[in-house]
Length: 162
Image 1: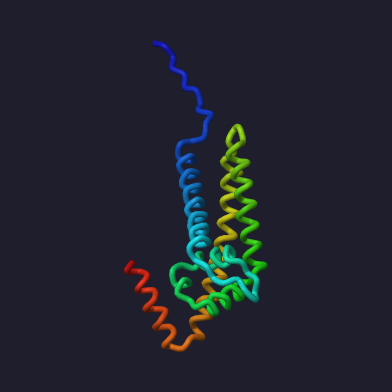
Image 2 (image 1 turned 90 degrees about the vertical axis):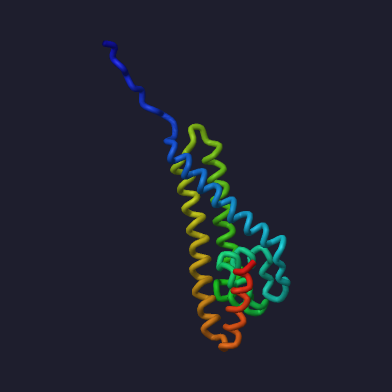
């Protein structure tokens, strides 16, 4: 009988490729939401000088309820999150992560650990922004009169039916 020898595979495991593909898809979906929000949702840029793209990143990360807030409530919420400085820090971190992802994608051999690290850093910025936003949103709503809370509930229900 002939001996069968198995040579070890040197490529990236199939499961890792699937996970990386899904992760990249999720990041592209988030980027699409942010870009769509910038194009479709305009909040005037005045006094506080926080630009529309920073507002969109902050508000979209909080879900549909944030879209039902008045402009003044949205501005107050952004200020509670940390204002322009916090939003710009998150944006810079996400942009830096995109550069790290690009480097990992261009490397030969591919560096899955470097890509996972970059994605984890981006997730950290988004998670922190969302956590602080949720706390600020709950605080804002806790200070609202019952009539305003009912208006928000109605707006949320209307958005859910679309």
